[in-house]
Image 1 (cartoon, rainbow, N blue to C red):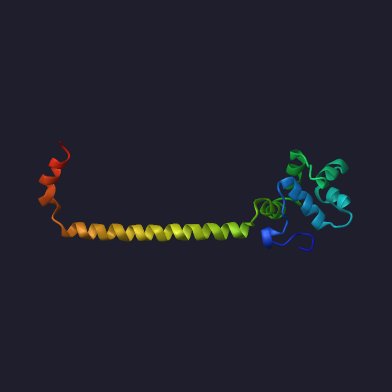
Image 2 (image 1 turned 180 degrees about the horizontal axis):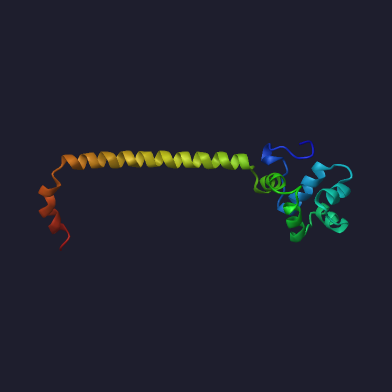
Length: 139
């Protein structure tokens, strides 16, 4: 775990305008010294691929190569995406849970209102009013 970022603020603290610059910031933070060589070794990149990554100019092919590498995957993508989006996965899950809890409460309220309406309708003789209601639609 010493080499990987922890999931804290923004799932790791990397703040970046896009995934490429997020990957660049991640690499600098993970390897403050010998960054280029460590990038090459960790993700099996060529020297040119590693240099472009450090400039924030990694190609889509390089990004895909890194993400699909055994040292890539979710543990790499999540902290970077959290920094790009502006909040981490933990924040997103909590927000979704709160949203769904609110929706569930609104549905409980609506169900209770429908229950009261149904109970009221059981107390009214709807059939007695049917002839008057039938004439309302024709004018």
